[in-house]
Length: 257
Ligand SMILES: Nc1ncnc2c1ncn2[C@@H]1O[C@H](COP(=O)(O)OP(=O)(O)OP(=O)(O)O)[C@@H](O)[C@H]1O
Image (tube, protein in one colour):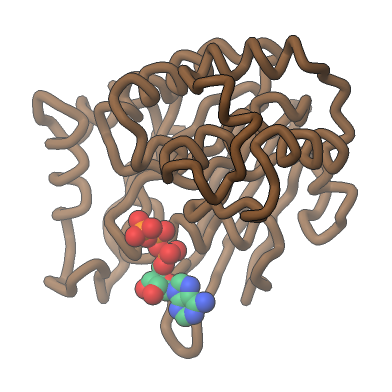
């Protein structure tokens, strides 16, 4: 049997009495580059937090490579880049990467670091600078470098492309597509052009449910529109109750997975 890298089953999450995730079913295959998209506040970060056991599920289950996500051993194959990445301010970039190498129990040395920084279009002097002196984009790139160097099988990246300049974004996308070890990537993003370029499949989260799961091409086909952005707008506009980012009734779902 083909065990998925990530398997969300009827995942429900409320914050106070507000339902954010209303029963998410999703399989992410091994080696897939999977993009989670949705409007601001749709629940993308919440789903990622559920996966990482940063918050408890109200119902449902998540398996990582066939093992319940609540077990620390099940989460061992994950490397994570948070949306608002803030490494310890007092470390230099080099010290941060060395710390992450230990935490990830990875075996890379200075040549791999140098190569990764080059591949991500990041100047090598980030290794000498204190991270508090790095720009937001440079800090994010440093976090991405730690994830990509981690030797972990599943990379969970919350908006890894947000806030990067066009050069850095192109370099990160190239690196994500090129990843050597066949890692699974589960990322959230807002730029649908980026998602279309790099993701094998996407899921559109809206109103607490998945409206669509499938390839970007299938999404365009399903919802029409010349671009994925137009298809996305048609998808999240369909069947809404008029609530800002939610819908009162169960919306239609086109699950092409
Ligand atoms: N700790 C929390 N306590 C209460 N409500 C929360 C908490 N975390 C998230 N929420 C709410 O859950 C909803 C989903 O938030 P979430 O951050 O998951 O959305 P998102 O899709 O990642 O948004 P964005 O694209 O803006 O980053 C929002 O309404 C948010 O206010």
